[in-house]
Image 1 (cartoon, protein in one colour):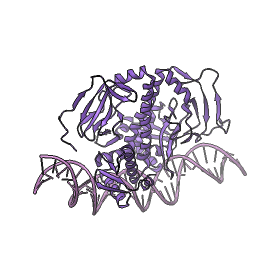
Image 2: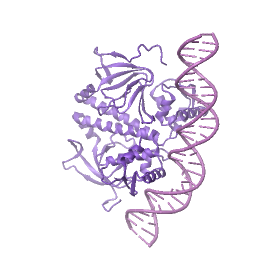
Image 3: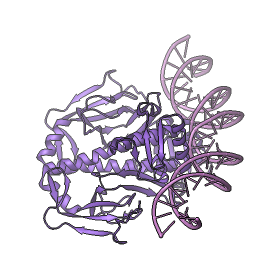
Image 4: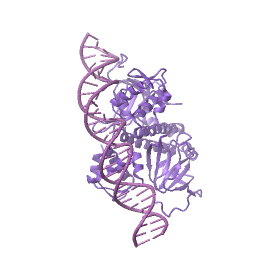
Length: 224
Length: 224
DNA sequence: CGCCCTATTGAGGGAGATCAACTCGGGTGG
DNA sequence: CCACCCGAGTTGATCTCCCTCAATAGGGCG
């Protein structure tokens, strides 16, 4: 993409301190602001101070960790509405980057902690957020530990289709490399698997970033 | 083990309703009771109503999911002090079994929810619990997605050594099959890897369930 | 002492990784 | 407008790490 929409090389900062605040969760607005990040731009890095939580307004982001020798594990993809980067400790335990150009709402960690202390509803929302993420990661552990390449790719496509309702196919914002590092595979295996699914008439691939789930029920059978 | 300590074939139930309650988390006691489970006994099953949360008093438990064809992924091992089985929804998303004979404290979900509503401290503790588990699973995703067999086993041994302080080696309560299903490997690979680490003088294996970390720093190097 | 379950060891095979070449598509500049 | 370029994606050939299948060894409990 990297469109002409880009107005500044540095992250654009839109301060919304004029009252409305960011609706971080239903019914509660916290003071905050939004930032725009271009493709592959770092949102925050591992070990950095975790002063903010982030909520995707538009676009998508990835969170990941890298081993010393460069092996990367993408822990999650974050789509509009998703919250990430909220830590228990003082520092981030993984990095976050923009998958595509994206707008992110930032809320100060201190504001969230204050809200959680003052409001029981907020505290419960916080727990629900963590619990939901936990469920996602438990499913993902099963995928990474025990599923075959085909099952992983099928799971991924179904998950993306569910998360981004888009008539007539999934719009993949991320590269094959991102998908591979998310699924614990290589780029080549992801590509080959997609081709094979297409040959089996499970999916169609009109363009590399768009996948049509022709037979979602068959795809669900590929999964286990 | 399966010691003579076993007094009943059915789970023994020790009702502690006589006042003290279970100290589920620091500073707050919730009414509850304890149960004893024998080795491999089910504590709760996938899809069951999640009416309770569980805290290990002694022994160890495993949480896991199984695919339709029997492939199993152990999501976590739970040692004394660990809490598990607390769900966001109405049902358990995975099963839990006793790894060894173990005593577990049960607390009603409704009691926890009531406490979280009444007490901000409790609500924050709840969030911390989920966040901690989340951190553990993020690390585990990296392990399952990107680490080699040797790195996985090394990580596991170091983790267990840290969690169960035991002078002169780790006491493994779980079988090789449990370890394999936790690390996304097979029993054979776990066994071979341990043997190789012993040959390399990283560890000693006086008995199959006891591992001595002769050179923990070298082991940490095996990891990545 | 002997059974049975767990763990180890060995031989062979396969799913996915690696290395490498080629294709495609979108952007840029002539 | 077209030629070129460059990164992303696909495809092919080969390799290897781990899985599978099979046999053996150990160890706890009767």
